[in-house]
Structures are given as C-alpha cells and as structure tokens.
Figure (cartoon, rainbow, N blue to C red):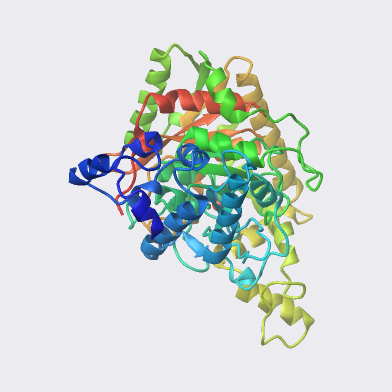
Length: 528
Ligand code: GLN
C-alpha cells in the first residue's frame, strides 16, 4: 500500500509525524528504522485524533485516500473480532476520500473534518446505504435519503464510513440485542462495549473510524463511551436535528459524537449542530465555534456533586476514580459543592414508561405493508400484521412495545404515562435548581465497568440499571458528556459524566477538556 512507503514509521504513543516534512532526509528514516518497537504507520495512523489527522491532511503529509485506505485495512484486519460494523462500502468511502483530495488540491478544503472517516450508527440514514437498526425488520432496507447529520457531515467534507451495530432499535445497554451479531469491547473481547451505540464506540476505540455518531435516548452514547475509553456527548435536546434518525422515543432521542478526545467531539458537534426546519423540535440558537471556545473558556467553575449518584450499586473502583476526578477539579481551583437531585430515584421508572410509550407508537409504522419485513406465510391482512411484526422484531423490542401499549391504554394512562410525565418535570426542575448554584454536575457515567457478554441479558431490570446515571439527563433534555477517568485493576476503562446546562455545550466541553488535558487516559489504546 502506498502509505507504507511514504510513512513507514510512527511509534506507539508519539506524534512525530505531525512535525515532520513530507520527505525527510534519508538518514532520519534509517535512524527511525533502527529503533526498537517499530510499527508501520498504518498501525498507528488509525489511533490519531481527528484534530491531528486534520492537520496532517491540511499540510499534505497524508492524503484523504491514504487515510481511508488505512481505516479500511484496519477494519478488515480486526472487525472479524470486534464486529462493530453491520456493513461498510469500501469503494464509496474511497470515492468520498478522493473527492476530498480533489477539493484540497483545488484550494477548496472545507475545514477540519474534510477527508476524515466518520462512522455512523445504523439508525442514521445515509442515502443509498443499508439502514437496518440492527433489526430483522429492516435487514433489507436501503436509505432513500441522507439524514440531516449525514448531509452536514458531507458538507463538512467528512467521509461517511460504515453502518455501525447497535441494540435493535437502540433498545439496550450492551449491543447484545442486535439481531445480527454481538459487538465486542476492544479492551476485552469477552465483554460488551455498552449500548445501544456499542458499534459506534467500539469502532473508534479499535481504530476502525476516527470519530463516529451515535444516538442517545437514555445513555446510549455516554455509557458505551465510558466502557470503551472515549469521549461521548449527548447534546441538549433540539441542538442536533433528528431528521433521518430512526425514531425510538422521540422526546428523548438525540444524535451526538464519539471521539478519542474532547476536541474531536467539539469538532464533530460543530459540524452536525444547528437548526433544521425538517425537525420541528430543532432549536433556533447560535452555534458557537465549539473547538475555538475550548481554548477561551478556562474556569474556574463551580461543580455540583449530587449525593444521590454515589449510593448503593456503584462499583467501588468506579466510585474511587470519580472521586479522584472530583479532587482534581478541586485542586485545579474549581469550587465543589454538594447538590441534591431528589427525584433521581424515580428516573429509571419514569424513563421506562415514557420511552416505551413513545416506542410503541413509533414502531407501529412497521406493519409489513409499506416497508420492512413482510411475512411470507400470512393468509390475510391481520395475519400479515401479526406475523410480520412477530417475525421482524426481537424479544426486547416486543417487550417494550407491549409495555408501552399498556401504559398508554385508556384505563392506565393517568396512573402511568401522565404520572411519569409529571415526574419528568420534577427531575428537570431539580437540575435547573441546582444550576442556580453550579455550572455543571459531575457523576459517574455507568455504575460498573464493561460487563461480560451474557451477564445481564437474562435479567432486563439489571440491564436497565446500567443507565441509572444517564437517563435523567435525557428526561431533563440536558447535555451530558462522558470522558475517560481511569482504569480498573484489570484494565477496563472508567467514565466520568459531566452534565451541563441547556445549550451551553461550549462550557461543558471546556470543563471536560480541562480534566482531559491534565491526564493521559485518552491516549491509551486497546491492544488488538
Ligand atoms: N439503555 C437504555 C434503553 O435501553 C437507553 C438506550 C438509548 O439511549 N438508546 O432504553
């Protein structure tokens, strides 16, 4: 491959390439060749950040086609073990990359994402590509159009790369509910990557994409980010258009980015955020230059610690790592204040009423008639509905449709759905009250590190509790980010969650980056 001739050497953990001219003197090459621990560049390039790669593309140290080839080779080499992808289209990615190179050659590069391969969760429409939601129901479906986020990525010059695995229709916390296959955690292939956006997290963690998009209804970006040592952001509800996102629970769903660093998340958010008239819940607000703001906003900040998030069920190693992060912020001059979010304990219950109610309505469209799986053995129209849905949906999706239909039924609506909506308002008020005193709230992201495959799949309630710290953020419509904050004794990543104020992503990202810059967790990569 061409790239190996041009950049044969880049050692693990260094970024010398970024400071190097395109054709260094021969003696330097020889010197490098004599060093131990030499990796061909393609084995390191895929662990560079979007910011670093953007710089290398801008200074013509690499081409977008070389970068795309590296990512494709990496994916082919390891995805048999990680299984992050449902599908990918090599020639389409190379064509996008070559268009990026042509733009750059003509002096028309579009910014930091031009030529960067971005993975997309397989619930986000990309015109002409499969769109399955990891469900048998949509196994043969091809997107007729681009989601707004896909269109915006293209406008930013990014290379849309691959369809990433998830829990069927984004329902789950481990990616084990996919109808196709289970994705492995790149840090320990016997464990789950988290979910539902497990494919999006595993792909970036394993070097199969530079950044990726997921969707987060109750934690599906932040929890897998925590379990895979990545930064993952759920933006404020309404900041990123949901047009072209397969709906799970429309009042909770948000698309957001995964990256190796907070800066990569800021760059990607900048590309996808903004008002969209095709989404009636899209908010009209100015979109700051999130990346530039990272450097301008320096604190010190007031950070709230909600006591309700540090009780039973929290793994001691996770608790200790989060405590060290709190101590770090304090030493760095931030004011740490205990706050109370008294309705937290009702979060999971309210979520599983509201999310399932909305899901039962959203999933009514899969009737075997208009699109999606159609039973071949049905005898009449009712039989066609029943059989198509019975064959097309997996057990977790069925459980949710049944639960959602029940809580919306006339005799129970007031007791469940209406009451859950009231609790939702109380949860939001808790946060807004806390924000009168603090700038952001700091909690663990997930109560445990990555668990073993199969460990929780027989017990839906145990699985639902994986999102106990993330769910309230969706109910309140707030932005939340998870960033790496350490490892357990057996080498599993731990995530720190920072919860921000509505539409103040620029502050939230700056607070997260202040921690990241003082630590090196994010520079560690799984050995695969
Ligand atoms: N794990 C939660 C659920 O199963 C959240 C999923 C999500 O955010 N998409 O509903």
